[in-house]
Image (cartoon, one colour):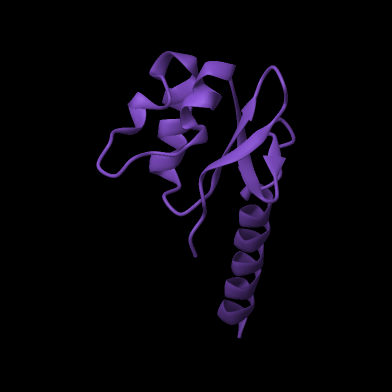
Amino acid sequence: MKTLTKFKQQAEETITEMDASTTTADVANPDVPMFAGARVFQVPTNVFVNARLGKKKYAKWYNYVDEDNGGAEIREYGIKNPKAPIVLQDQASGAMMYLRYGRS
């Protein structure tokens, strides 16, 4: 019986240690702007206008979103989250549009 009680104590200690080390990294990040549950990327007006009409079939995304104007961050987010929507916001006017709609 003593071994069973020791085992229970060790298991409870391990669980409390695990609870203390658990974090929610991307769940509640107040620094990241969100709109309707989607991440919002602020881009210059020329990038916003280029992406406004959408991408033609088989065209590369870098033709629409420059790598130097925040496109690298958008690209990394799109690769990391392939089913998540991407929203662009114009820095000058504040207008928003979906660059990519989300999938389930």
